[in-house]
Image 1: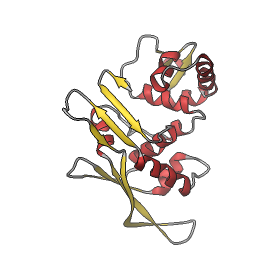
Image 2 (image 1 turned 90 degrees about the vertical axis):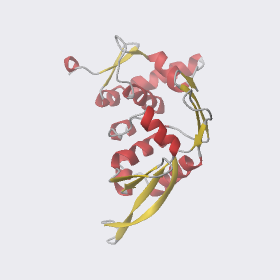
Image 3 (image 1 turned 60 degrees about the vertical axis):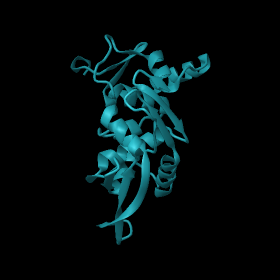
Image 4 (image 1 turned 120 degrees about the vertical axis):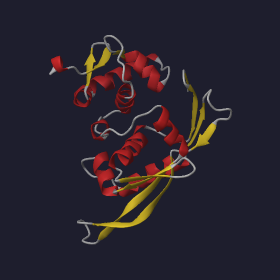
Length: 216
């Protein structure tokens, strides 16, 4: 994808469910430690991450699959400020910590996680994205297109007059789509209108805007 800030290429499998778990790790982190090579290590309670992902209890097997795919994905970032592209990952490793918590399900103990963020994600966090908000309501949206658009809008501090056009947002997060796929995306957004409202976004005809006090 080419943007006004540079070019980004993703090699691997990444989707909105992967974004859910990255945001949950960032939001639920209990400690943070900067690493000398530019990475960041987080201490997180996997039970809290799991609860953030799903009310019904996202399984540790599912979480492990998402983390493995995040670990395998390679991000290449090219910007004018660097002579050579940044090539890295979003997550370098997830390992058990020596710190433990009581586990009410088993009566024993569970280990906390040490999660090492890759330099590519750290760079995005420092220069562009702000992902330290509560991701719970976004994870509850039914459709990936709704999640992607919600994240896109929440990363912008300035709102266009009257809000964003739906089709413009769809193209921004999904690229140019055939006419049927565009219609399907609009339909899914409308089905998620209640969830978007809970996040603070309003479907207003052919636009999406941030909710105002007068809307309540």
